[in-house]
Length: 514
Image (cartoon, rainbow, N blue to C red; front, side, top):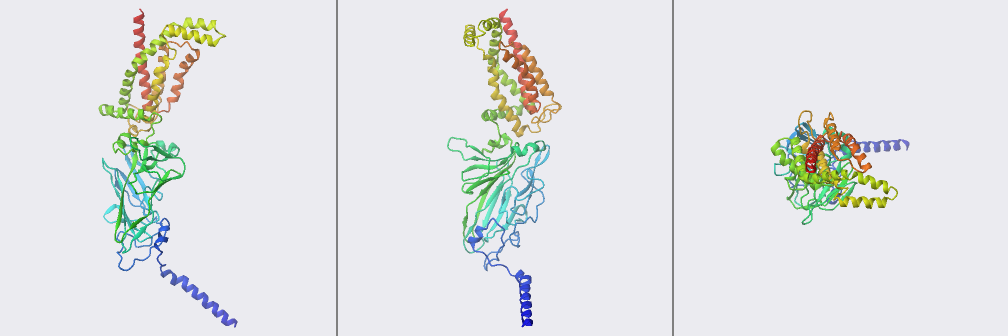
């Protein structure tokens, strides 16, 4: 009995070992129903063998079962002014080296990481199509085949991702929803690396209503939106990666952290031996306002011009127009500043004249301050009466400065964020107007001119205002030490023009009084 039991156990173990160790490895699992395959489209799955009479997979598609594959990353290929590398898992761009005038800039993560920019079906194993280094193909779990091609852009048109899903079977197939991702994150130039993660954004421009320009929506937290967007993507100070969804192509947009957007398409019913094609424009590259504006797609809205955005864009257009004549962005800034000062000169003259008149009234104001030292309300009434009698307004001296504040902030954002000024030289040691003066010469000269300017100004009757004007050159000098040299050049030129105008105004008023 014990002998028979031992023999039975031994035979059972042998059968199990033979089945699981040898036979099972050579038997393929049965094909899953279409509904189950659709539900698992985003997960790795094995491909069932094609039915009799069905078209075979093209030679470019790997015959191996579909799996999450990092089997290869392609060699660098030229694409729209860049060198790109594509990963087989999802056929995403895992490297995008933009050819800048200062050298190549890697906009994707380095070292390359999956799934990459503009990845689709990340679980599928895409293989290159022979004869086209920018075209890839894969077979999906539902039996359909997808071809993905990156089409380079032109001077007038953006690049495209062309996707074609083909149903090679003799029955209709409901292709499962698929996704296209942008991000996560976006690389930048070396000088911006430290601040890059602080300025990363996931954002999109909503489709505008009739007569409006459309709202720029920044995704500050992970969320899903069914709104219609003109474009969605990720950006930083200098670069933008965006997708322009064709009408009806995607049903929702999901944002994530680090900044990433994923567009999800609805399911598509594809008839027997039929196909469905999507042409999806995209952009990845620098945020040059003039360059982005000429596409007329609102991509330039990704550039942050601050509160005075309309004025900032006008300033950039003016600088671009001047640069066509000067051939140098630094001289263009100087010319624009001189023109602004000439336009404001009537207001500046009125201000200087008012300040000179207030200086003459200083003895009378001092007398009133002594008389009504304990009655501030009566003092203000008497002082305003004196000002009104002589046609002077105490705030008129600050008016030109208030008018220049919007111009200053508009130019600050324009010179800080526009790619046109990146690595743009002026003269001598100023080789990049978008970064600080390496030797701090411009801010120190600017501070010295502000000091001379205050010396020429009539002294204010208000002690607090007088102290503020005394300390302002020092405060501004330290504040401007780390500002972009293009912005410092603007303010230096502005102060120099003001100094020259004040000298001329002083002589004119003295001649009139003589």
